Structures are given as C-alpha cells and as structure tokens.
Image 1 (cartoon, rainbow, N blue to C red):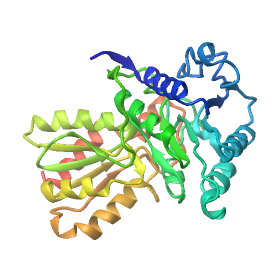
Image 2: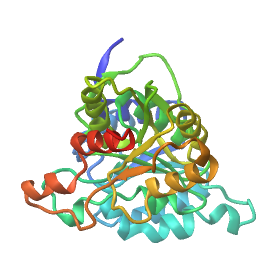
Image 3: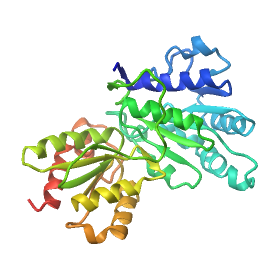
Image 4: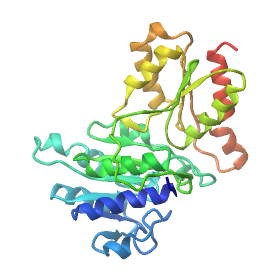
Length: 325
C-alpha cells in the first residue's frame, strides 16, 4: 500500500468528493493561489478553477456566513480556517446558524457544511494561536466533531464529513500535515462516530485523539518493557462519542487513563470520566486519571511549552499509578 502525507490525504478526500459532486466547493484564506497555508489544497485550483476553490479576505465571519447561506441553498461547502483559533471571529455563524438551523426551521433547512483546519498547539505560536477547541464545539447540539490522528483516518473521515447532511467540525494539526501513513488508492469512507482500538492490551485502557495520541503510543512501548499491557483507543470522533468501545475496554482492563491536549476544566476527558464512572463504576479497580495541559494560556518559551504540554512520561506515570506500581 502506498504511503502519503496527512496533507495529501486531506487534499485527496476533498478532490475526490468534488469530482463526484459539483455542489461541493472549498473556500478560505490562501486555499487557492497559495495551495493552502499548509498545502492541504495543493493542485485543487488548477483542477477545479476559481469558482470552486475560492480565496477569501481575512474575514472569517464573512466567509463562514457565506458558507452557511450557500449550504441552505443546496451547496455543500468546505470552509477552511487557517487555524481554529481564527474561527472565534466566525463562531456566531457556526453556533447560532449552522448548528441550530435544522431545528429552528422545523427541518426545512439542513446545513451540509464542513468547517476544517488545525486545532491545538503547533510549537512557538503563542497563546492566541495554540488553543484546542474540540470541547467548545462538542458542547453544541447540532454539530459533529471529528479529530483524526493519521492520514488513513483523515481521508476516510473527511469524505464522510463532506457527504454528511449536517454541519461537521473537522480538526487537524499543523504538526501532523507532514505525518506519513498508509492510505489505499481505492475508495473508502470511515463511519462518523466510531472509535478505533489502535493497540490491544489487557492491563489499562488509554483513550486519546488527535496528534497527542502519539505520546500514548510512546508510553505504551515503554510500559511494555515493564510487562504492562496498554490498550489504546483513538476516539477519532468527539461528537457523537463512541462510549461503548471505551466501556467494553474498561470492563476488560479495569483501569482508565485519558490523554487530551486541552485545558483540564470542562473538556472531553471530563465527560468521558463521568460516563465511565456512571456506567462502569463496578469494573474500575482504580480512580480514572486524565492528563491535560497546564491550566494556563500556552506559553511561547520552548522550555515552558514542553512543561505545558502532556507527554509520554506523564502517561507512563499515570498508568503506573492506576496499576499501583
């Protein structure tokens, strides 16, 4: 099987869907002439032309609103944010229009739109460019939220998101665009709302998603040297949340560690912790541990940034704690 970059998987998913359906178009800052800020739309302007790959001004509220309006009128827009930090400028359109329109119109309008771009930290970009927004959007009824961690999942899930008749938030990472992985050339689509067990184990369940899951993989290798077997679940979709896969794993391992690149208050790991303790409390042999960033804005200093972000050492310590070792 061929190996391609994450950015290439994103471009392939969009291009394949645009060839299939003329109502799909891509719009955002630098998506056309510049081939995307992170080259995730490379070559698309040449193939589809400026009517379907559209460069915008720096006006997220404006082009988000255009996308919502065109979705109401039969199109299927893909709206790219250079970073989801900039989506805050257009969040009124996402929350108050895209997410609520189906209910507020009594089902007369559905909004088949994808808002996509990078989330979370990307190194020394400073506090205003380094925030994770998964829990913000997942808190909104009417939105589906997807955060893939590898090229294979990214392509299959993005194709599913584009075909979905409801608004989807599709979150990537600047630090994953160059990641390589095996991606089939044949057509495939991954169902939204299904988590994936990336590594089977028997002693402890580790749940994570997005780029930070790499730290779980590193930790699992280290822990294997101490004969601790980790089961790693990649959520892939944040909303709807595949809680059943997590519960079945916890019933087997009896321990749960959650790794998330997010502030510790009111995040996805908080929700998972609540659901597991309410539905599988009797199976737990240790308190659930969740690992998050420090509860401060992201620092710029590389020394402080390293301390701010969770890492594999944090995961190893947490696993050993729930194992009472």
